[in-house]
Image (tube, rainbow, N blue to C red; front, side, top):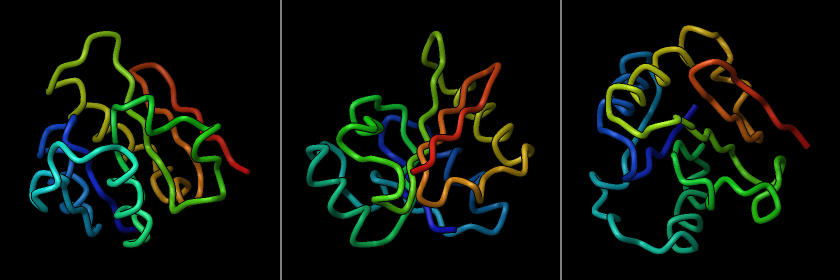
Amino acid sequence: MDFKVDEDLPLEVAEILRGAGHDARTVVEQKLGGAKDEQLWKIVQSESRCLVTADKGVANAKLHPAGDHAGIILFRLPRENRAGYVRLARSLLLSGKLDTAAGAIVVVGPESMRIHRA
């Protein structure tokens, strides 16, 4: 799968995805930092990438219903921190469910993973 890692996540998340053989580009690396959500969403869709983010607004199922896009992975932590996001990325890879994100909204937290499909 191809991924776009949002600027609210550490670069290590993209590195973890790349290490597993995926094409992962970051908002920061592509100099899209500070882009409005709507602009970023159009770019992500034009590239047919699954968006990896911690932004609940972008992962809103009413705005971007499952099945209408390449996928969204939303990382949720009780307290945002770099190490926590890195742990979530690793746990997602270890779960073997990364490929199920295609066309879905996947919410990954420290204790659970929910997959919303169309």
